[in-house]
Image 1: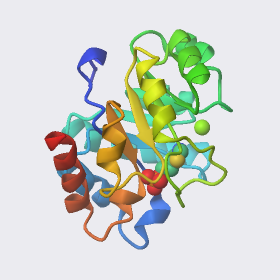
Image 2: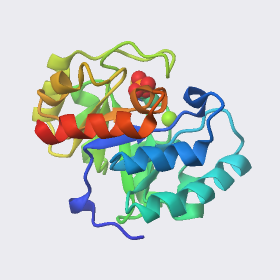
Image 3: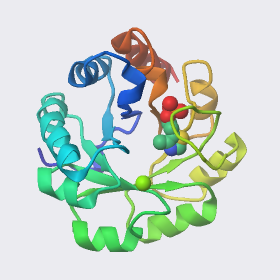
Image 4: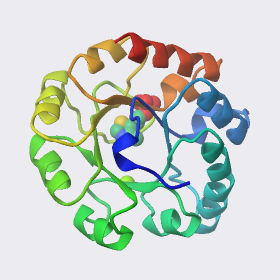
Length: 212
Ligand code: TZP
Ligand code: MG
């Protein structure tokens, strides 16, 4: 699929982590999350080699396509291009945003992780399409996160002109507080994939967002 960047709904952005699934099947869990209303999927695989990441991305793309949801690849611009994913998500320790934008061309989505207004403004200037900002709450999904208060998140949102998503321990109990900062969406892993009923968990978060 090709994407109209201006029309992308960042409301409920799922970051994958197979460790959260236990013995449950990955592709089936993804289908459940999409059925529940996830609007963007980021494939985040920290423990696989390039070949396995590539093959997994190839398997995921027809599923996200069938829900007309963009697939974003974490860390690996080469794999994004190789499978024809919608875009790539990079952190402050990955390829610089400016370089990634040059390699991707104008059509692909580029997301950048940020922790303060300076990084956010720089990423936007360097060609990012959206920002992830966190970590807002304690999380078991990622080690060594920098923390970010809701006040600082609001500052990032009001100080930039591209979509901003709150990430890090976001769940059904705190999602409304995150949305109250004015951000464009929430970015979650465990609040969907770590729940016993994945579809219901996604649907519940989606409804919070809708009612907000
Ligand atoms: N980046 C900052 S926090 C985080 C990432 C990838 C983990 C998000 O997972 P969870 O389970 O929603 O806290
Ligand atoms: Mg990274």
